[in-house]
Image 1 (cartoon, chains in turn yellow, cyan):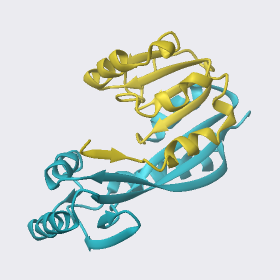
Image 2 (cartoon, helix red, strand yellow; image 1 turned 90 degrees about the horizontal axis):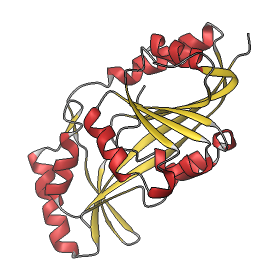
Image 3 (cartoon, chains in turn blue, yellow; image 1 turned 30 degrees about the vertical axis):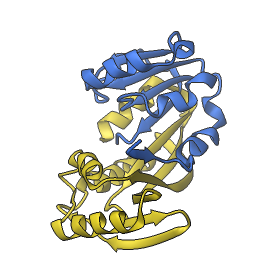
Image 4 (cartoon, helix red, strand yellow; image 1 turned 180 degrees about the vertical axis):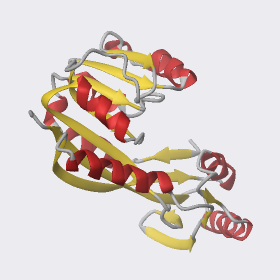
Amino acid sequence: MTSSFDPEGFEPAALAAVPELTGARVLEIGAGDGRMTWQYAARSQAVVGLDPDGEALAYLLEETPPLLRRRVCPVRAHSEHLPFASERFDASLLAWSL
Amino acid sequence: MVHALTEVWRALVPGAVLLDIRPYLPFGPLELVEREHVQFLGRLEEVQFDADGASADQAISEVLRRGLFALDRADSFYYSGYWNSVRDLREYLREWEDYARLPRHLAGEARKGLKAAGRQAWLRIQTYVVVNRLRKNRA
């Protein structure tokens, strides 16, 4: 290994401290390659991972752990025009994206 | 950004939580870490002020002012990146080249430090990350 990120686990700890993600329908904006998604998706009801970068989303789709595949749905779109009905999500996450 | 936050507000049920997690630039200093020992090597060269960060803060303030969301709490943590070669550090920084650059003299210091410290040593940069927890107002 030549690089390592957040081995201290501060980011997962920050997400773990948010009980509202549990059992929730989550809209993650800037999901990218899914780095943050995989840290909480297992306890959510469903996650829509939104990103304008199709390449990153393809990676997310490919690398999503098998147990999370039915739960995580990548969507290519910009946050200025969300392709969803109103009041569709219980929680949202701006993942290094604002 | 305000428009994006307004869109998120629309997509959320009343009372829903919105987490805004993002780094605050500039990056922390470049350090050489060997087990418990941390050595300051120097600072990255700042290419430009992170205007996006300031705009994001303004956008959050604006949606709070409009009463779309209320701020539940604000937290922070340090997100650390570790590299065991200057080449890998440079590769990572390519993604951030609009904001920060590894100056040649600092790259030299880093190489020298890694060589002297041996295999247990890592280069480290810590990034300050804020976590704003907002809640969609019912009104």
